[in-house]
Length: 103
Figure 1 (cartoon, rainbow, N blue to C red):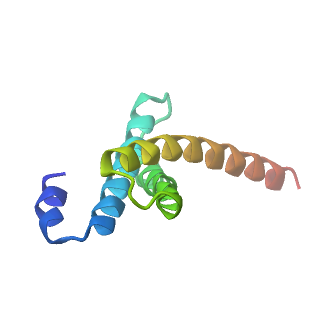
Figure 2: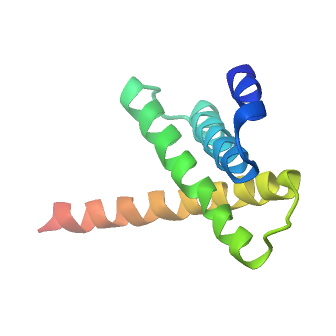
């Protein structure tokens, strides 16, 4: 996060928001992996970080409706949407894999 904070001085406000959302999503994804009972592998850790980053950036859609939303509110929305989105996508992908495995 220090690297992100140093770069924040030269970034525009919307770039800062996106960078914080990506970092937050990655941390959420790795955090969820750490509290699960699954065996931690590099592939799983990277996959969860990518999925968390992608889903937390959905909060950027909120900015279209509320462009003056403060950064802490945006990050909070990103965290919530990131967690919900990751859970939904993971369940959907597992169901799809089960369906494909039965054919």
